[in-house]
Image 1 (cartoon, helix red, strand yellow):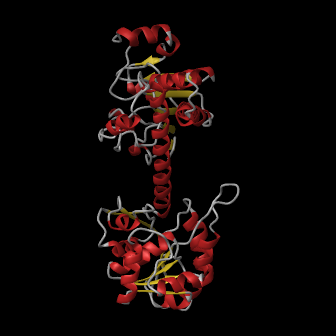
Image 2 (cartoon, rainbow, N blue to C red; image 1 turned 120 degrees about the horizontal axis):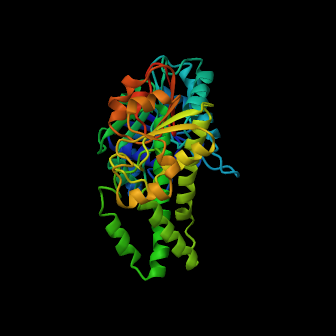
Image 3 (cartoon, helix red, strand yellow; image 1 turned 135 degrees about the horizontal axis):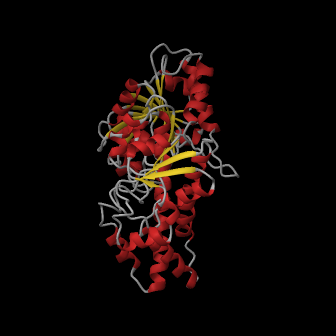
Amino acid sequence: MKVSIFGLGYVGAVSCGCLAQDGHEVVGVDVSEDKVRIVREGRTPIIEDEIGDVISREVKSGRLRATTDATAAVMDTDISLIAVGTPSRANGSLDTQWVERVAEQIGAVLARKDKRHIVGVRSTVLPGTVRAEVIPALERASGKKAGVDFGVCFNPEFLREGTSVKDHYNPPFTLVGSDVEADAKALNGLYEKTAGEKFTSSLETAEMVKYACNAFHALKLTFANEIGILSQQMGVDSHAAMRLVCQDTKLNISPAYMRPGFAFGGSCLPKDVRALLAYSRAHDCEVPLLQGVMTSNKAQIQRAIDLVLATGKRKVTMLGLSFKEGTDDLRESPLVMLAEALIGKGCDLRIYDQNVSVARLVGANKRYIENEIPHVSSLLVTDLASAVEHGEVLVIGNAAPEFKTTLPALLKGCKTIVDLVHVGELKNLPQVEYRGITW
C-alpha cells in the first residue's frame, strides 16, 4: 500500500520505518525541515533501539521518503495516518490542535482528489474526538462527506519506548475503529506482517481502549509499588511476592473481574483491603491507591442508589441480595447496603433472591440476617413473578440465569430496569425503560 504518515515524532518515525520494512511505500510528513532532512539522510529523528538501522535501510531501498509537502504526500498515497502529539495543557486537558490542524491540511487536499482516501488517527485522543473534531475538520476543508467520499478510522498504537520496533511486530493486538467496515479492513491490511489478532470496533470504543490500556498500566505500576511499600515494612520480599501473584492467570492476570458493573462485596475483598489499610495507617505507610479502592467502591453503591431514586418511583423490587449469583452470602453485600438506603429513602421495597431464604440460612449468614438486617429480611419474597409484579422499578443485582431466561416473559406493563450486572437481553425489550449503571 501507499501510506503517508503525518508527524515524525516517536510514533510517526517508528511507524514510517516499520511499515516501509513491511513492504509499503511510505511518505513521512512533518512541518520540521530538520526532521525531514534527517530522515532523507537515512537517519532517525528519535532515539530508539533498532529504528535507526530500519530507517537507514528503507530510505536506501526507496520505500521510505520524507517531505514537508502535505499536498504531494496525500495525492501520492491511499492512506494517511495522523501521528502528531497531543500534549497536556496546564489544567491537564488534552491539546488536540495539531491533530485538527493536520486534518484540515489533509481535507484541503481531499477536495481535489477523486480517488477514495482513508484517514487514520494514531494520536492518542479521548473518546469522541475523532467524531467531534477530526471528522468536522476534514469535512470543512474537503467539502466532502466522511464515510461516503473518504474513510476515517482510529488506529491506536501499543508501542513502548525502548522496544517499539519489537512491539510493532508483536503487539497485544491490532485495533481499528471505524463507522465503515471496509475502511477498517483496508487499514488493518497495513499490518499483515504483524503478529496477533486484528480487531475492529466503533471509533469511540477504539479511542477508549487506548486510554483504558494506559490507565491500567499506570494502575498496575502504582499497585505494585504500594504492595512493595507494605512488603518492605512487613519484612517480605516484594519481588518474590509479585512474581507469584503474576503466576495466577486465572484470576489475577486475566479477564476475571475486568467487567464494569456494581460494587464488590463478600467476606474477603472488603475485609482484606481494610486490613491492609489499617496496617498502613499504624505504620505510617502511604498507600493512596489502596485507600482509593474503598472510596471508589462506596461511590459505586451511591451511584446505584441515585439511579433508582432518579426514576421518581417508589415501588421497587430488587432481584438479587447476595453479593453475587450462586451464593447465599450476605456479608458485606453491596446489595444489602443498597436495600438499606432505599428503605431509608421511603421506597416500598421487595427483594427476591432464590438462594437467600431465611428458613434455609444457617451459621454466619443466619446470624447476620437475624442480628444485622432483620428489617431487610422481612422484605424477602420467594416468588419471582410476584416480585416482578410489585416493582415499578426492577433492580437487577446479580447475573442469576433466571433473570435472563424467565424474567422477560414476566414483564407486563411499563417497567424501569436498573441493571447493575449487564444483563444485555433486557436492554431492548418493549415497554422497558432500561438504565445501566456504567453502560
